[in-house]
Length: 290
Image (cartoon, rainbow, N blue to C red; front, side):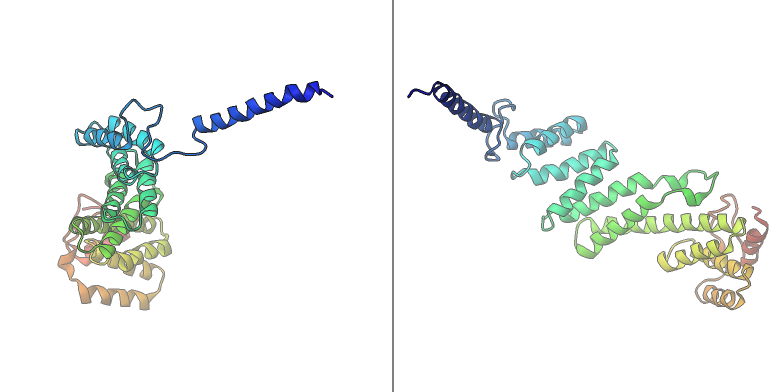
């Protein structure tokens, strides 16, 4: 017996199934080879072509154009042979745009996904530069409020990343520059900690001041402000009536430094120099610049 409903529905189901299969093919649900042309890209715009165009734009310092093309390449050919290099250069392009967040995100992703890449040393170097440039200027701003509320995290991260680069790739062409930047960062971070220690000393928060001064001694050996940090720690101990510790700290100073080491500019009171330990102790007591 003829079933009208079955006869009508069967071809409809067949047509619908074929359209679904066709749609899957059109929208790429079954995937495609990485080097196949994307229908949205103009004729000839393969992954190689996009990379070359983006790279040329980057070399010409047309950063915005380079970023656009690298982003297109990364979006359309995320697993191709040009994807790794594009990701690395895109991080650099973001860095040149001063887009710190996207630059760090891109370079962190590259380091995580490519632990054996031949340019991994450069990746660490670039990561250090990104953090270095994002944080290096804040210390030099005249501080009119609690300096402990400033965030030295970018500088510390840069210091650590450059240290990692030197440890992992001591023969890298970027290692020497990283060492020089670490010296600069060590002095900047130590100076920042000394400013915070002084801030606490002025407010009679002697424990906090001692902690900051001790942190300099433990983490920034060789910093230019080390003599001042030691004397400040001694003074904090004296204020806390921890006389044995104060004497031990004084002995550390005299075993490693002398009064001439306090001739350096006072990083807390910029217009002054300390000509003796007594003068520095007077400053810590009276909070006056000469």
